[in-house]
Length: 154
Image (cartoon, rainbow, N blue to C red; front, side, top):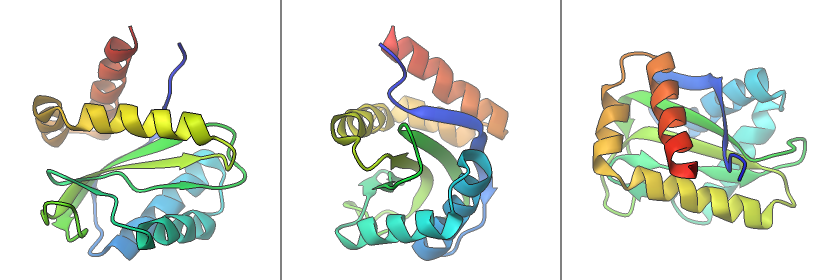
């Protein structure tokens, strides 16, 4: 089975400064523009529109903002560890410091849901999340995510 979520090494950030969800979505849009060739403001707007339907704050200091938008051919992810936790209206009211943003093609119904399920299952693993919080560089964060993903898929 192929990778359900495409995480590009260039789409991993540590210490991203964002004081609000809106600022975070703008940063995600900028990263998506450079790594995925998408229009940054469209990405930020799509994430904000999805967030208005209900918080993607997953609990445990984690958020999984996601949106579907044209111009992307497969489910793509951006992995971010924030410089400071931010309020996210999460289910447990904890501020968020780890963000895995997912962007999907408009017609990726089943793939989008499968990827969300896979990501949320992995981010419920507290020892894995502790490793993500302890990673010292974007490369280390990327290596952790992809090594774990390969093990999960195998």
